[in-house]
Amino acid sequence: MLRDITIGQYYQTKSKVHDLDPRVKIVATLAFIIFLFLVNNLTGYIIAAAYLATTIYLSHVPPSFIFRGMKAIFMLLMITVLFNIFLTPGETIFTFWILKITKEGLIMAGRMAIRLIFLIIGSSILTLTTTPNQLTDGLEVLLNPLKKVRVPVHEIAMMMAIALRFIPILMEETDKIMKAQMARGADFESGGIIQKAKSLVPILVPLFISAFRRANDLAMAMEARCYHGGDGRTRMKPLIYKKNDFVAYLVVAVFMISMVVLGRIDILI
Image (cartoon, rainbow, N blue to C red):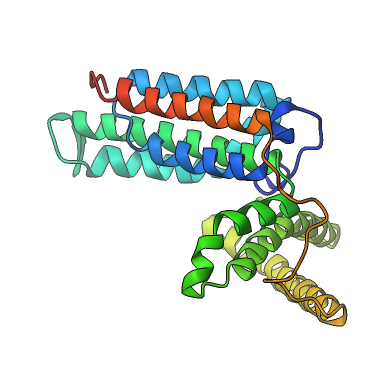
């Protein structure tokens, strides 16, 4: 399960998507997420799927690597689908005890499942094709207007980048702790839900200690180097828009407009 988590990881390769300005990828991801919830029919979802397929193809990231990350949200996906099926009022199709399956519930469950899957894939593409440093720089530049109202833009961007960087590190640390506990006879598979939850205690305690230790070491290292962000701080690689970035903005705009226009004409689902 831990090896299936791909969010926060960076896939090193050479592609047109990797070479894009991080601001383009951040704006494209946010636009895709927003417009995804404006789609109402099958045509819109097909366009969204074509957009994701094109992006994956241009990123040169193996589709198997991207879809492997879907295993980590399988339970969340199932819970979302079941809640929408049984708790959405409407025309009853099937009744079992106190549970009722409605036509509207099935439609809503299908929509939410597709949206959640597309959302995770779209977010994964952003982190797989953009390094944490690039994400930090891109977010800071995009949020620069908020400095006028005294919002600590640099600190917010830095915290998000550090959080993304820590995800694969903590996953690796968790894997090491689990293997160490299993070597000492720990059993994480047998028993019911309560027993499995109790068996996680020997993992969570050292994991939290390790996380706090890493955070403290990072803070001390930044303080020892007299680190300070904000005004006056320069970048080794300044962000400069290129021709491909403007082309990417145009392509994203065409896809998003198509999703909204064609996705709301004829409601099929």
